[in-house]
Length: 465
Image (tube, rainbow, N blue to C red; front, side, top):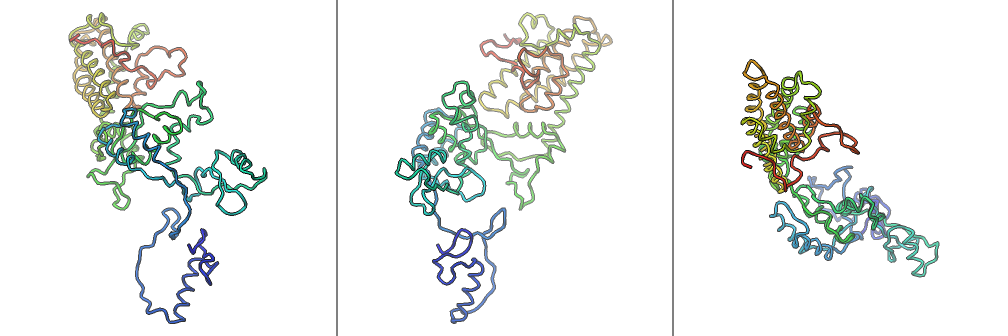
């Protein structure tokens, strides 16, 4: 190298030592002109590399870098997928995992940045980098230095480079819950939350982040940081092209939320994607899902403002949904009520199976279809013939049974839809009759409520049962 890290020239530059790089170039050209080494001056445009953030001109510089030997860690992460300890969804991305980790090379972890985890290396002495010590902290480094024969007051200088972002983020699954301080403590967050179950991320960083987390977790804790890796697709423009500032087709999610609501956007993204497949962001679809939220709101409004109108406290208390409907109660209902509950219970089973298989889009679409076609357009209309005297109904037992079914089906539907549309479902659920907050629970919220089917060994009752 002829250049120092501050952009000035070093002793290898001869007479130009100490000059700034730009001044040195001008002086060099001037000196060449004086000794007739130049032929002509011909202005031309060339590509000059610049820093993305600061705009400074970047200079190539050969420098010492720190590397981590990755072959052993890579082999452990490779074996974890081969043995099924880690499952990648969709499975076709196993091939990419194998390609990266079976031919992995040493990992350069040095980065010349202002912010980050400083590399845990200390150089011995005031100058030079020939002798160094790797340690967890300066105290450990000083202890190792004295063991190597240096005095206790030896000068130690920590490496100024910071760790690669992917190295630091690879520590995330266990470092954020107390590693290494709480290793072996059964009452710690580390013992409770590590390893986790499912990691959800984009397929484009399968190696850069996911594989690094697996490598670091297995190497430093002996456990895979997660058992399932769910890979979603990338959100693209409506025509399927990649969003780009240059093309001007970037959609700001905050603007979309302001126009259509957070739940509409969330539902569109989750239900519109197949694992590993990109999703075009279609505003017409988001607008349609906003209408679905409105439909849901109107259904709840009908139940609370019409069906439950005039109900006394005792009648409302009988409508609490504290668990699946019993077979005895189911058998006592009329045919339309048994039909809609059967449809709802079958939906619970189907949605549960889909979610457990990570078919999130299919599950969300089934809830949409049931609420719109079966509940809103069919049963809500049927219920009006039972609720009002002018339509042939109005008897207390019949009204109460209809109220029970309206609330029960809507309650279960809101529980299933909550992961997809959390805001509107949480708000609506609090308007339905519900029991008191369970003992020891801070808040009685839908996000803390039981899933409609908590025990797979006890099937929900249907007309076919």
